[in-house]
Length: 554
Image (cartoon, rainbow, N blue to C red; front, side, top):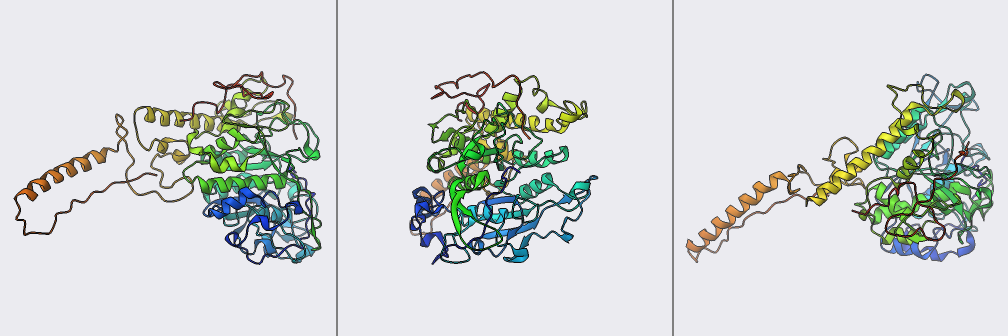
């Protein structure tokens, strides 16, 4: 599992006098109690501005959560059991130890007081409460976010998820692609999966659907010392390395890599906080919590909470633009993404302050991690055909039977091409003097129409026909409104000149308008360094093969 669970829990933590962020600040707790990823000045300042996750939808795919865990008492969470299928892709029931799996458990059930899934929820929407006021409890940066928790396995005292009894026989396996599609249909802006695991070709469509709708998918690197890929090329055969996913490695408050994953892995994209954080001692008791190694699981959940803050702050930004801002404005450098040449630290350490102060709408609506991966993979002989496949002409996929990349991986390449083509259209309309050009972006045309009825954050747009004049970018119907308005104004002026002064009632002219709002190394080594245009790479940085994401911000 990507987050091999050393974060077992027993929470005895600090019950807050008031769970509302407006009533207290993170500074109320000691910085060394393990809650520093949230108990800091940047989060406190955001909360004072009302930036607390309100209105942002976050999906969490994880193990059963303890539904009455104190830190989650006031959180807005919908619990749903994930889909399980057999080898014929028919929906089946998942049973664990002979009992049907449920979406949640209650505290003390089976002896458990917490779980991997519970902890991930708490790091996103927790309020810091726990079973006792003697010890601090986990809290999240976005306590007001709306969460959909999709359960894909049972609680346990070790690994993140206990599989179904029938998994070995292939009769009841978590349907990862279907669960991701559920999150997309729920209008999730962020999808946190602090787990790893294999994917099959049937899963790809769900993950591509998330890419298509601009859902930011966050996953964690394995907590192990096994070296990963040489370069950021993605691998659709696992959850955390699926192209476009923000794969996270874990660091402490000083930016030092966790010893459990201090190793080359080209698919690491971002560093987030999972070391020296509040860590449950044992899920089978409720004694106390201590600061320890939360692993890449915690790092992923913390990053998801930061991204949710940014989405509330910048409601007009798409998920792709938020990722663009994330990798361009790291603590190690500003403005341009620079990847670690040793392939341990990705593009760098997340900078929450930059996420909340740099307007992401200046960047293009193309997933920059997906872009890097598509361009990098194209330069490796062993990988160049992965994302260009077509099942109609190449149904058997690429590679040997033992090392096969299914033909459905071609869906990923075609989605990248769609995003690029959509952005070119946006730029063309802008150069032609058009207005509301973002309606043609990849996210806003995800459902095959540029008349998208919601903004990226799910808010309804004003009604109206967004069809544009190709020459001016102005809605065609608006010319009629302007013409009628001019005529009405002229008529009003004439009438005003001839009507008796004793008539005091003024003629009012209405004005209307519409606003639109198992890892492997490749023999060729890293792709040769090439600097981004218009800037240096910084200290030892290596740029993507073909400058993905480094184009002029439109």
